[in-house]
Amino acid sequence: MNENLLEIKFYGLQGFRLIRHCVSEYIRKMLRDKPGLMEVALNEAVNNAIEHGKASIKLKLNVIAGKRLVVRVKDQGAGFPGQTLLAKDEKDFEFDESGRGIMIMKASADYVRYNRCGNEILLVKHIEQEECG
Image 1 (cartoon, helix red, strand yellow):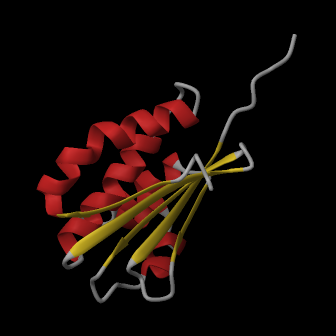
Image 2 (cartoon, helix red, strand yellow; image 1 turned 30 degrees about the vertical axis):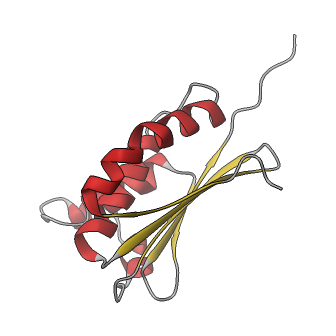
C-alpha cells in the first residue's frame, strides 16, 4: 500500500472546487510547506483538462522515494499535440491567447510531459531534502 498516493476522479470545475483544498494541502505537506508554483501548475493542468477534455478527469498525486512529487492529470478528450507545444520557446506564446498555461507549467515543474494521445500530462517536482546540521 502506498500511503503517499492520492487519486481522485471528478467532473468539471464544480468537482475540482470540491477537492481543491485537499489537493493543495497534500502538495504543501509533500513539498514541506514550500509549494512554490506547483499548485499553480496543477491548476493550469486541471483547467486545461476541464476546458478541452470531456467527461471525467482523473487526478493522481504521488511521492516517489521521498524525492519527487509526481502529478498526473488525465481527461477523456481526444487530446492534442502537447509535446509539440512543450517544445516551443516562451516567446512563441508571447501574444497568443492560449499556451500560457503550458509555459507556467514548464516554469513551475522540473519535468513536464504529455502522453502520446495528448490527454494526460505528467508534472514532476523534486522535493527539497532537509539539511542536517
